[in-house]
Amino acid sequence: MGQLNFDELKQIIEINSWTRNKEGVDKNGEIFASWMEAIGYTLSRYSREGIGDHLHFIAPSKKGKRLLLLGHLDTVFPPNTFETFGEDEAWIYGPGVCDMKGGNYVALQALRNIHNKFGAVRNIDFLLVSDEETGSDDSRHLSAKLAGEYDYCMVFEAAGANDEVVIGRKGVGTFFVDIEGIAAHAGNHYREGADANLEAADKLARLVALTDLGKGTTVNVGKIEGGIGANTISPHARLTFELRYTAAEERDRVLAEINHIVMESTVTGTTATLSGGIQRDVMQPSPGQQRFIEQINTLCHIELPTEKRGGVSDANIISSQGVPTIDGWGPFGDGDHTVRERASKKSFSERIALVTEIFDHFMQGEFQ
Ligand SMILES: [Zn+2]
Image (cartoon, rainbow, N blue to C red; front, side, top):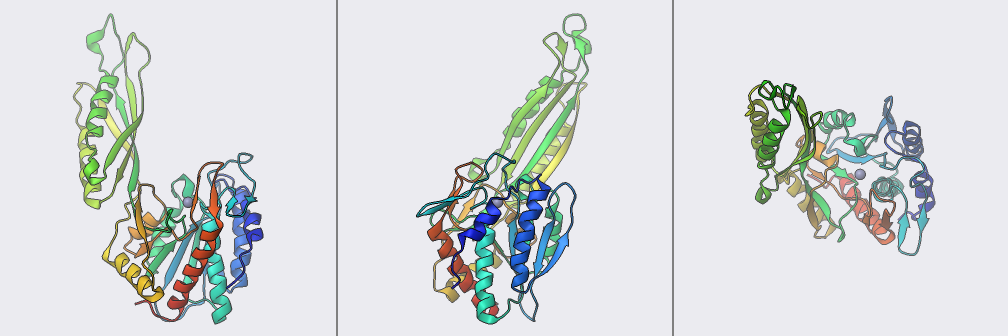
């Protein structure tokens, strides 16, 4: 088993990789690429402007099943907010130690172990995208397209507190409703106005009522804007809201209702338009995923603990393409998206050992 070298991880952690810092994200990618190329990978680069390049590392192939590893190169921290690496006995600290430069590093170390043992890695490719933290608006099309080439996918976001892998994640969409009314002086011409704010209030109440906590569906109108001042009937209002759901049927139900609510005005003279949409579709447990887990359990003689999460990741994208996908293969950590982000050293070693074992069985053609 390869010795854990946190110096290498430190090297990439200290490069600011905020999503909009293209130079930093690309630098992180460049170093990672040198490590991957050293173990026989070919880089297929998807060049981008304004965000970092997406990197698809391709192993020599042979007949048989194909496994996709997935990670992201970006972090949520703008320059000069959180850029230092630290460690003590039990933890390492720094931007991305668990979300998810640390997770990428787990995959790399396991691939190195496989390269050492077999002399080459085959049929295990690695996709690193650059814009996950801003919703994968660009990379989601690439991820969805590449997904079709694979039989399985492992995503290296952080593990659960008890080493759980992630088998379900809510779907999420962000939407905007723009309501146009007619401005009028609230004193002299009250009847000539069409009150966009009043229509917004009605729509807000109806949208929130689509929430069904029993089914894990929530609609949250997190922002309202509208109007000019107290003496003017409001000519414009805007609602910003988010939908989260755990099942495709719920997505379909709520989307149909949203359209209905937007189209139907109760305040005469107002009209409304809807924009936005689903950002990441739901990751639902599936029979294919269940079989993937059972094979891992049998081959590695373990009982993989599993959990579902409310938050999204790129696992949602691959999974909704019908590829059996398991997320949470990174190290356990906490404080992600804050300056307290840290990852457990013990969890690092354990994850690398387990992932190496899975890759080993995969290389021997034992996954069906
Ligand atoms: Zn992440």
